[in-house]
Image (cartoon, rainbow, N blue to C red; front, side, top):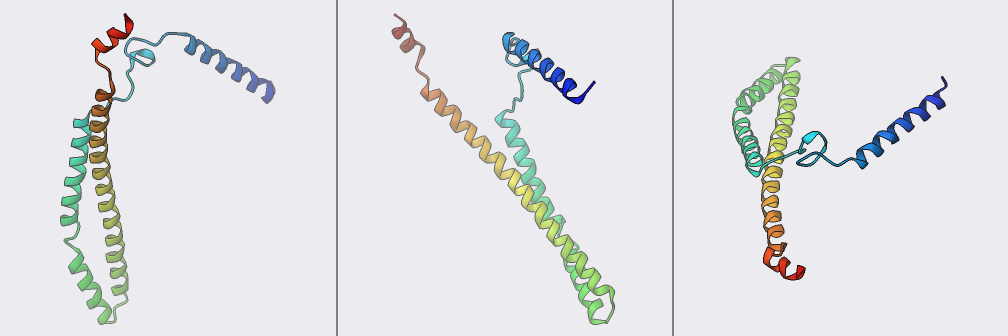
Length: 142
């Protein structure tokens, strides 16, 4: 079978599956198979954001224990004309760079989830305020 022929058959089969999915009613509760899709509660977002904040706080303290002694050792080795002094200083700088990147990432996650939680709450209030009461809708239906 040629590539063009096989490709045409696959496209035809995909189009038929797509048409069948469009023409069928979704299962109870939303998407196909009864799966409601992704559901995240504000409490979940808050808990994850809090965990990221706590990780950042602990990491900023615990990740900095070796910095002063490593830097001092690198300077002492360099001043003593040891070639390993520059290598130890590179390790120190490498660690500091990656520690800062990790701290920034934790802060970004925490801030984003806190923002998302607050924004969802605002959206819920706005949507709830925009809905007309049932009695008002009933007046229109008369």
